[in-house]
Image (cartoon, rainbow, N blue to C red; front, side):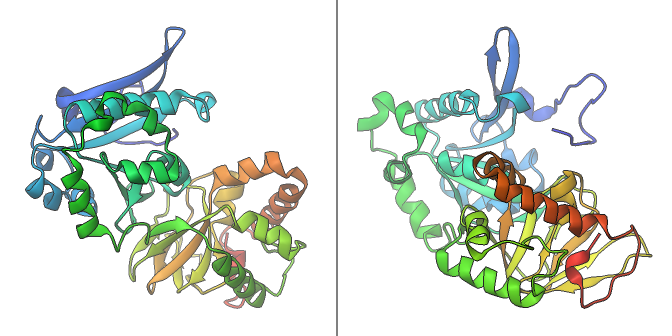
Length: 355
């Protein structure tokens, strides 16, 4: 996946740690080749708090769940699919088998994490977004949870996991966990991450046009309102709290952010590069989105902020559906990043031209 993680043996291409000894390891094999894998560890198999970092455990609010369901929660990590198998049935087959095993083994909650680019996939798998995102050593991390027996929700989103319920469909013994979950988090569900509304799209466009005045070096330059709406209508909205890092310099992330509400500070380690403050209507992440490279600066929410995330995979998908529109979008991204020499100081009136 392009990540240089200290705990991984990159020379031998092995990723192994102490949790593997307690885990169920799942693989998808195509013609004797492993093309996808994931790992699931149950709370009844080990003390999760002894093997998971405090940062991740706090993000999940894991202690609260362990207190009420000490032997009935699980954690899924290291979900990796070879690039050529993404978008195939490999992900569904893998996750369906995991889900069947959770039902069989009496697990009521499954925790995981995802990046903005993976939101849609995890939504299909009935994961909910119930806590704010935070940055880790790799990138933006969003805590997610699957209430295993929340079949009503699965039906409402037409999750492919419904086919995996099988003989468990008459077993409603575990529904108490779902009731507890909604009492605890009902008001927070899908607040931090959700689909963008039509009202928010119009607000984002208005803010952006006011901020940018359709400058030539702008992500939506030479685009109609309908074009802008086409792109933004398929995006996601993510909320960050005041003083929360959105992403760190060096992280392997390539999503583009459009500020709907709030203010953001841009900081780079290079002393020759200025700090900037961005506001509603401004965008950032153009360079990484265009070049698909790691972050070249750190971004910090100076206030409670709301962003529309234009994920790189969304750009790629729209390029197939509407190549003419996205050709203009790529051209705009190129203009945003190609005309600014590295280290050149920018005027504060032009925050969109960040290198």
